[in-house]
Image (cartoon, rainbow, N blue to C red):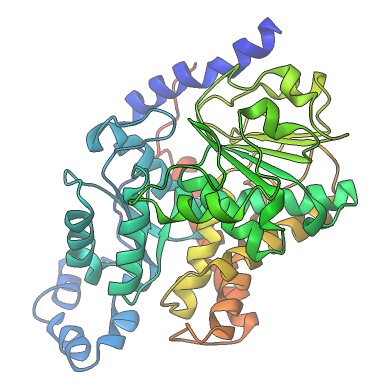
Length: 441
């Protein structure tokens, strides 16, 4: 037990040393030739005037002459960073840099962190709208509930580029993929499964929405917030319509009380609540139905250690961490989702697109060999990101949301080429020691 805890704590100190050594994780590098200074007459003045005028004549030409169609803004006000809470935009910058790094390495998407010192819904919306001409998509990150709902809804309505709240849609999509795979292993239909969602914040409310879209019976879903089980008698929150909706349509037996009451006979426990450990107790897992699935996904420490849940009877365990089996991390979703959305010029990313992506991820896991320790692929499986990209583009076209429709073969080739280019670039920079070797740790 002590060795497991020691291993779980190692990433913190190593991460601190590596961040200090590299002083950040991303930088801007040219993608065009610079043979000599004469080339700047093409890249800058006077030659650059011509593509400017081409775009002025037809804004769609920005896709042809600039990198806008491959550029995403990672926007956060730092009010809900990982499991750390409201630590502010500057302290949240390492997370946003990390997000940008993953965008590039796993999806070939150029992403730029924008941590902002404005905090009201209208201020955030106005900021994003003001900078949107530079970007083909917007990734909202680590914005507190319920503000994040209103920011997302407003930007979806007011912009014609895809806007995505990763803590909501990304997290929910990968969890749904884990649910799909677990249902296959348990030989259980989604409409018959009983779900307990521990934590009623942005992520789990999105999980509930995607479960409903996927065919789950809303009455078989029980949500808990800090006050206990949500039911029709729960106090309505005028700022949180999503929570109000689920207090009315979930929990068909109208349970009340706490987690012990909710878990009796449940097939799934999906926890997105307070960082642990020991937020969820082993005796509570024992209350569940035979061979339950326990997704303890709080960051940076799960609500219950996976080995503790296993000892208490869990058949499948998952967390948000890469150092345990079954990492349910949104990094399996957003690189491919934006790759596909950008390539087809999607105007929105819908819940249906999220479900399709989750099916693609689970399908890929099945190809690789499903078992209780492998319900989703790992981050290094490039094929997963390609499948998500193609699924996103395909569904956007089916919904009439794609400004630049094309063949599925085109989107597959584009995803493979972008991802391969990103990885080859990093490998070459490391081989040439342009990216310095890390210190011995």
